[in-house]
Length: 296
Image 1 (cartoon, rainbow, N blue to C red):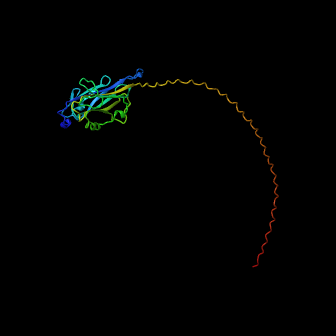
Image 2 (cartoon, rainbow, N blue to C red):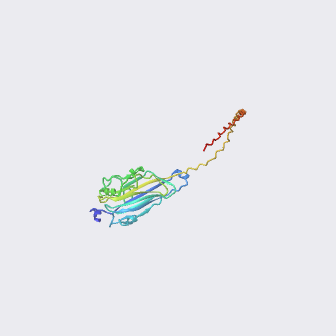
Image 3 (cartoon, rainbow, N blue to C red):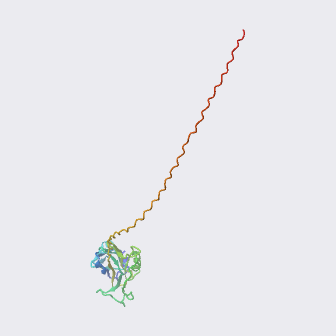
């Protein structure tokens, strides 16, 4: 409820603001001049969620609550610079954004080490340096980071749940960015590719009355990657070698034919004359006896 958001500090808290600057810097690789690719990209910020209900926050002069935060849209010009001024925050207010860097050219882009800054500013936009006056005596010194490695560990993996747990006990502005799309950060963006990260902005529940305005910036440099196509080698046909003439081997002498042996004629058989058979004399017939008639 709205009274809970005020955290019983309504009589003391004035509506305060924070300035966000998101910078995607482009550096031309010296090799790009020998390439035929084109290099361009966009940086787009979309509203994702908020807990603001009845006291709207203003993003670049337009008011938003949890009901219409999804309609917030901002896209970069001038090499990816986006500036957002968030006004009318009270304790425990937060807004979540998604930020997308998209490669719209024909050449590849490569991410470089990033930097970020976080510090109080006066009404003229000048950084307030320690020692801080009351009521922010003892607050952390300004953060103006050196180059951070382009790794998932350095960039962070906080979810909205993690961020809100920190916000509930914080007494300062809280800005967090993270990547939850994979276990590692992409190192390059191919043509048509995109990299989307989370951006959380909130005002802690326990901020003191009179806390100054805050300034935050995140700079992600990218460079062009010249991919020179490997030329297709032109094959020069090798000259046909002149064949070495192999001398013919000497002819193999034909073997001397063996004389065909003359067949020995078979002896002619002289028939042995057969002996003339001697005639066998016929036997002299034996005369039949003369029958004697018996007397009657």
